[in-house]
Image (cartoon, rainbow over all chains, first blue to last red; front, top):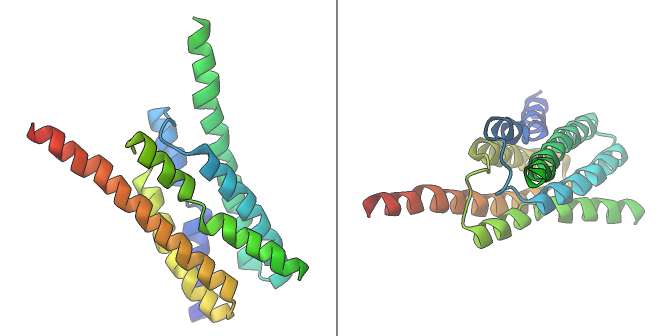
Length: 93
Length: 93
């Protein structure tokens, strides 16, 4: 029970770890200082952790990494939107 | 052997996941768009994952999370340096 709580807390904190970054990007509409290679490196890493979690047969591990991957995808989507799409629109003017 | 490679790749990618962000902050000397709550949330989460890794008796899990925590500490240190220290110096002028 004790380890279940520690594992669940760890999972909750890291699987929603990119949520504050999503909120910040939504508020500031700016991603200039965020590293895109960091986002992609985490994306591939988290996908591999998910596979490894299946191997360990540890459901906390698998679910946590899938949710991390999904929130990370939102950050990457917002990054592309606010850097390339917005810049593209400004260049058209 | 197959799972060892997947686990090691996952560990390498995520444990050095914040390195591209460290490099970006060093180059731009700006952290305005990076979310500090994200860094702290990951910090606490990764510490708890380390404990949980000890429980699982999985060395890859433990080492990966300790290294992630260390690189994350560098990002937090740089964040504080480039936001508060630099801003403080500019205000003194």
